[in-house]
Image 1 (cartoon, rainbow, N blue to C red):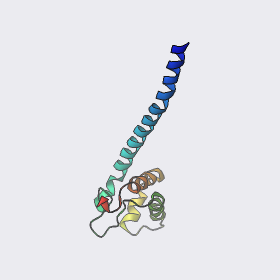
Image 2: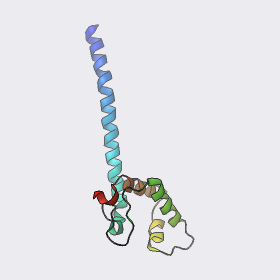
Image 3: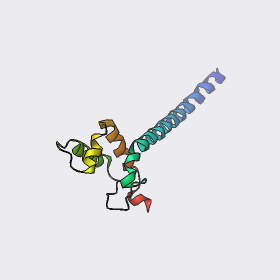
Image 4: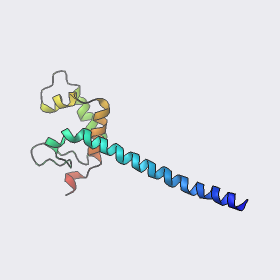
Length: 111
């Protein structure tokens, strides 16, 4: 009886660790997908969300704010700027993923 309860107790200790590791792996994989979707943005906004030109920095901005801006640009009746046209090419899920990706990057490229 003692061996059985020790094994059960051991399983109870291991189960949360396995669960946490699987969540961490899923988050890392999800962020890799987000980075791939956002790769087009890097041409103007930098690979780390810090644009060195006249384009706005995106790193560290709130995900909701970034997504709202993209949704607004996508919803324009007559796209006029480059971003209006860019936003039209993304699904709502892709916009959410782009916003999530840039929101976890440090502001100013981590400088």
